[in-house]
Length: 522
Image 1 (cartoon, rainbow, N blue to C red):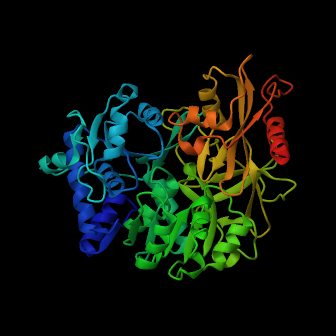
Image 2 (spheres, rainbow, N blue to C red):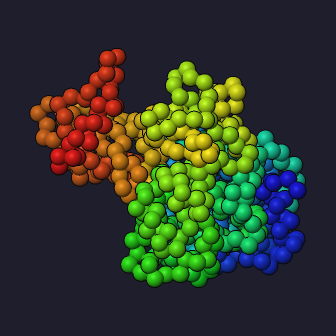
Image 3 (cartoon, one colour):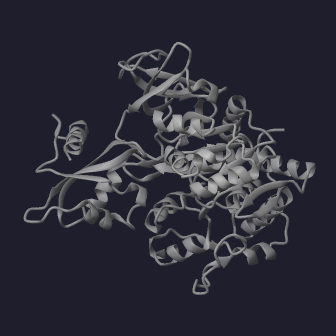
């Protein structure tokens, strides 16, 4: 059977309709529950005018709706747009403006937030989820322009049209920040998903006996695709956290015998920081995949000492998740590595701007890492330029090298993108917001190392003439609500002028050195 989401679930329902598929906040959905809700939702979407190629957005905390909406959209040839629930309404608006969804499904809390600022949004049919038994109730003040999901699904009596979906058909637009701070929709096709799942299965043996803890945000590829969706469609069980909580996560691991999970380093640090972590039973886990940012050696040792079999990995939205994996038994013998390349993909490096592809290098001679294979995206939504060259290589912007045994080592970023706790932060989006402040004459944002988050944003600030210097608290207060909280800077260094390079452009390397020097002296 081809690895297409809807037929896979239909077959699972036929095999064992009553088998558990998703557990969230103590409520269980069987395979039949998921399949039936997805079918009714597909019918409702068709009656709202959704057809092949149309986008359907979901804005809410992790939920069953993410699974049923993806399956419903896939059944009728539409495309899911899962939006990061951590984004404020203003940033949600940018994603919806770019993706132009025919229908947008929201949780009750997000519906309230969006309704307050609807003048920012592109035209779409707004639907609030009022059927999720573990979510908050819909506000009685929410206007009638918001359709209720329960009524739509109850009134949808016609069967959704049958559509054959091929490997090149889009299944998701997964948004990640662009080079200007604008979000970019990464085009994820059915074939990309299938190739990613094969790589995970070959490396980690994902199968129907697995129970995955799904706590990372579903608005990211690491949350929805890495293990969660794959486990569901291979017949396993998803234990969904609406948003990650370390204490609850440990309890769920013990209670349900969780076998796999995915998280960014900050999530695992929160696990290890729980006072009773050393005494808790983690023996059911066989693969705790970590991605989004490098994990430091001290945390890795602490997790392994507590019985957590950590699997460092490397990948990105453009590769549909991880393309390298370092297995638990390899961690001690290959310190700092993110593992070997998964089946079906290739990784090479470019040692210089015009150098040939090679698989060598070392810490003193890193190069940009390139990925090729069926996991690689078709490109960005609405964008003619592609991150993939004529030979099929994805230029990742990550620096590293590949040792003689095929293990990949990372050495930093080619460009200025900051990856903090697995979240992408472009300096331009912070700079653009601060340049509108009356006390700011100029600003430059750089990433600096952080033991908890991998990297964190810091800024050089030039104050307007005659104005008092702004404190970090004032800067964060100004940005709060304009940007997601994980994008707020954690350090500010006042300077008389932003350092410039020979071409007159801001010199980010010099700026970073200034910040690091100031932090070292503070």
